[in-house]
Length: 137
Image (cartoon, rainbow, N blue to C red):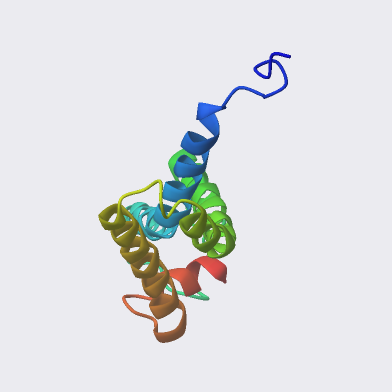
């Protein structure tokens, strides 16, 4: 009996897909911070001053600005994926610990922790500039 017909062929895209998800879940908190600041800077250019929490509503601060609307939605998506990354990044790090180089895993872990540290520092302490608090209001 030929066993090659009974055994499914290896699927090379699974490991690649897991790596892409792993890298994305590690870097999305930094992307959320970068997009949040890009949105803040664009709004500041439109209204003439740095947006303030509870004064300048991020949803309606710059009417007619398509880029502002796009960045507002993108920040929301990145923040949502960042929360999902709290689960996916550690699970995928354990699953891929033998498939990825140790240095790459370390850099991704540092990027993940740095992104979340920036988000938490901005939310709790208002560093630097209450961007997340302004966005959430």
